[in-house]
Amino acid sequence: MSKFRRLYELLLESQIVDVEDVHQPMPAKRSWLELAHTPQYVEGVCSRSLDESSIRRIGLPMDETVVRRSLAAVGGTVLAARLALKHGIACNTAGGSHHAFSGHGSGYCVFNDVAVAARVLLDEGQVQRVFVLDLDVHQGDGTAEILTGDPGAFTFSMHCAENFPKAKQMSDRDVALPAGTGDAEYLDILEAELEELLPAFSPDLVIYNAGVDLHRNDRLGKLALSDAGIAARERAVLNFCLRLGVPVACVVGGGYDMDADVIARRHMILHREASLIIEVSETRRGRGPTSETSPTAQDEPSVSS
Image (cartoon, rainbow, N blue to C red; front, top):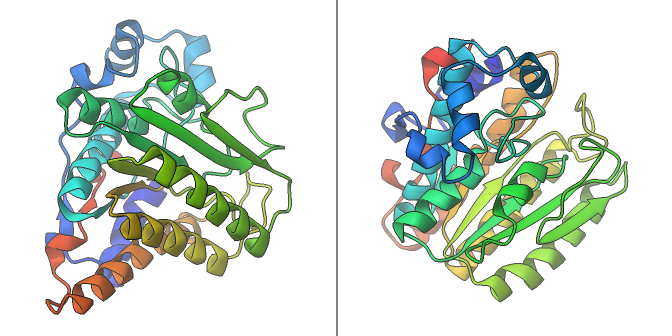
């Protein structure tokens, strides 16, 4: 849990963002949550009345802190999506809870912030088509289940085949990679998939799950990307979206290590690359970088321990 607060601190310490670049989200409304989750499940979480089996499946204690953090993370992804539509790129310092299904949580995921954000913007008519780009090392099974059959959403998951969850769902497009896949092969496959899928779907918004658990030293990943490979992945995704003129909202996804600082620094690669791309883009336009063009939606500080 402490990686989220540490990421925020590192972004300020490294001057990747200033305090004025940070936007505080409102906690997710129940009406938002119920666009992706059943009312019974939403009530069970918010009232902390889930049964023990459901709590074990999530893997987190269902206390007030976890509930508040989950609501803030969803709010952060909704805010990042709104800011992306306005500015082109926005990054949450949390989010990516892609194992949460419509009727239950799983794998440390309580509410599926990406699915909720997609449904909120579609429901409001802010967008007509949302492309979910999930590059976490684990399949986005909950996101696939929630958005299956939704004509306004396309789900793409590129993940390690030999990893959680054991029973995979069917995304609109799944690419299952063998354990040990490294930088060069990974990037070649990703770029080919982006070239084929994004122009064909022609989305109004991309929501990008930038999990770093595909790092070769991650405790729960089985792929073999380096820091440089992750940075190249972020540049490939962000630049491709910008070339197509598609706004992109980013969430941090998974990353696991005993040292929160190590994981926070891996997550920070996304924000650093986004900031550099924005700076280059603004400089080319002759305006220079502005703080408003690289907003970061921050998880509620008090809920990260």
